[in-house]
Length: 215
Ligand SMILES: [Zn+2]
Image (cartoon, rainbow, N blue to C red; front, side, top):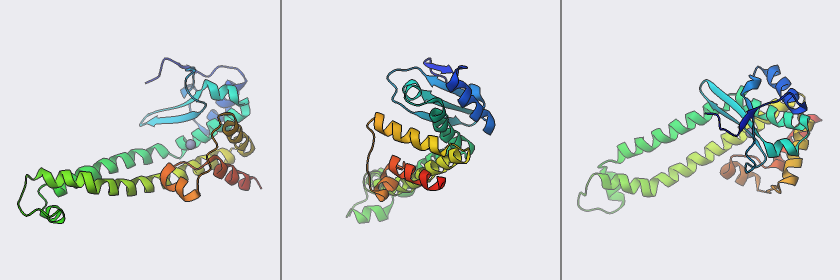
């Protein structure tokens, strides 16, 4: 569904530059929108459902970056589309739901769970399910989230690589640094912390990696 605040790319410098890179990789330019919502923070994102893909650029980002820098940010989002990263997200969502219901099914009336919690009488079969959701599921969830975050992190690097392969490495690096400076978002996380908990590399990690590719 398209939000009312979304408008298609125009034929200004930004529109022409972004359309050119989209056409180059086979993405329909009419599926790239500018979000005029003044409350939306500076950014761009790819949103994809089977058969429906779109890239949204917020007005704040458009105002912040030069046309070619904005094009490099869109090239990163095109990388998510071209390399089908949204499919990994669907798979993760289905897997998480499957794991949850699988656990509920396995633990319904499970005597092993009741023994772990010291039950001497047999309570309602839902009790071991409830105990598992409360005590075991957070462990599974943490493990799942950590692995998922590592995959998301690698997808971010992969999307950066895609933009670099289009010859936009310098522009992407400049746009990241500019965004970090202007939006005061410059978190310095430990690499392992960023990989396990954030699912998104820090700007410094991305900039360092893009710079090493340029040499
Ligand atoms: Zn990304």
